[in-house]
Image 1 (cartoon, rainbow, N blue to C red):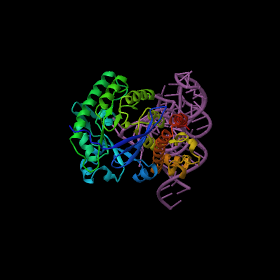
Image 2: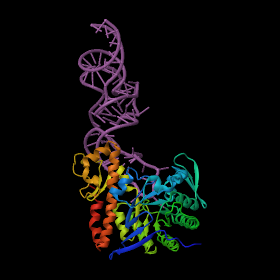
Image 3: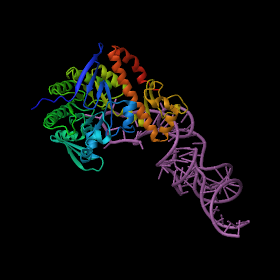
Image 4: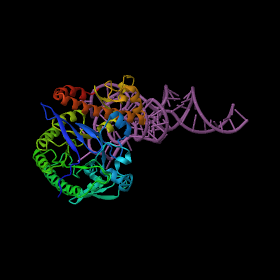
Amino acid sequence: MADLRISMEFKISHRDKESQARAGTLITDHSEIQTPVFMPVGTAGSVKGVHQQELKNDVDAPIILGNTYHLYLRPGLEVLKGAGGLHSFINWDRSILTDSGGYQVFSLAANRKLKPEGAWFSSHIDGSKHIFTPENIVDTQRIIGADIMMAFDECTPWPCDLKYAKDSLKLTHQWLDRGLKQFHSTEAHYGHRQAFFPIVQGSVFKELRKESARYIADKGAEGNAIGGLSVGEPAEEMYAMIEVVNEILPDDKPRYLMGVGTPVNILEAISLGVDMFDCVMPTRNGRNGMLFTSEGIINIKNRKWMDDYSPIDTAGNSKVDMQYSKAYLRHLIISGEMLGMQIASLHNLAFYLWLVRKAFEEIKSGTFTTWKENIIPALSTRL
RNA sequence: GGGGAAAUACCAAAGUGGCCAACUGGGGCAGACUGUAAAUCUGCUGUCGUACGACUUCGGAGGUUCGAAUCCUUCUUUCCCCA
């Protein structure tokens, strides 16, 4: 079998002395990504409520996510193929990472059946039956054309007993080997390179996490992911898992913590040596009226903002922050106006991207840990 | 001028003798949301109390009844139809 083709470059430029935090650059054929990075989630070919143009010009996201399960069901592979891949279809010329559908194994558990060969799904759209295998998930991600493709895994639920976690991990590892094989024996379709990230599982069991991290580290992939966390377990358990896993995962490859999280989660994970993040929180919670700001967390639906005409966030990381008042945004969200959801999503994403860029700068200047400790109280304050 | 219908909590609207402090919507208040089946979901919404519960309510007044939002009398108000 051929060696993993080099499909991206990752260089760590700075390291924090007091923690495992690193600052670096990840380069794909579509964009240069400064790490740590937060990747907005665009499940179905759209970061909900935010234009691609805003993602570039205002949020300045170097990479966004897509989801294999959702894109496979709709618009479907023929449409994606006809468009020449997802980048072209959605008019996004920066990087894209696609989740494999492993999370849907977890979140759509009621609609699926796990078998050694793969996972049978009933479509949440029309009930039709489909099988996802480690192989066809690679093929599908080839058609989507993601710069970074994810291995097909089972994101274990929480709580979950040791036996279940063990069996699940075994399955995830078997699926990984099959996915890798498929990855190595297929080619990218659209002239740009694609990387393939394996995913560490093991629930909240340290020994399983270590075993999984060793198994994955051995594969020599260009980047590695930590999955199965932030599914309900206490944050401390999540941090403990990240810590043991990162002691084993290759230091010179990017580490991607899947599905995390709150601003505080992200800073803590950065200090544990994580480089990449994604989460629906800034967009979903934004649509539901929660704002992450430099001064704390705001539930803009609360009555107290009714006549607060101050800017959304005086730190002003996004153009909308100074353009609109809290009172106006509250009115829009309360009234169900779609503009409210758009502004909230844009603000939150801009805030998240500002946070990781700031983390980069602080790591670079050797002040990350102090800065982190100082900013955490504000980030977790409920206003 | 004549005939008919109706008045229920913030709004709309069920209930037509006890299971009613009163269905259900809406509105209001608060909470949840972490690789998006989510512009979604949950709770509360007469007063006091954490709660068991207690107390005051269904236009006003009076009455029938063991018991009334529900039946009777009367008053007030609103709406509709015919002149």
